[in-house]
Length: 169
Image (cartoon, rainbow, N blue to C red; front, side):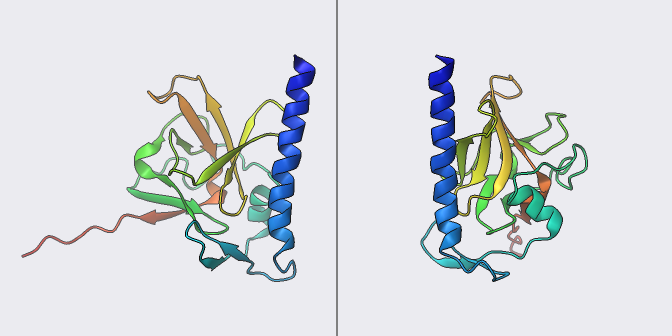
């Protein structure tokens, strides 16, 4: 049983990595802004990332707990992918899990994909649009009614506040 699980985990990892690698091979690797396709099929530009952002977003690193700018941040709006700007999470799905990273119990439909992590145990979450590493997802912890925790690196996110419509005079 364990061998079947490991084979499945490794196969899934290889297939997903190949999918993201194929996407990156179609882009100019020397360009600081790489073309991507958003969920509507429109071409967009990748942001140029700092070395710290690349370490997490491209090389699947993790920022230190309790250091990210969105860990204790609770304004109304939408969290977007730092790399391609795709909308990932709404603020109403964010909750305080006290784990040291922003936590969400739901994603915007189709915005996040789950991939068996290289360790074969955890489940990595990536931006479905550009394969940027976001963090990991955990189930069965009981933090919320949905019983899901997306543990996301702040450095992988950009927050866009909701636009309030002014009341007519």
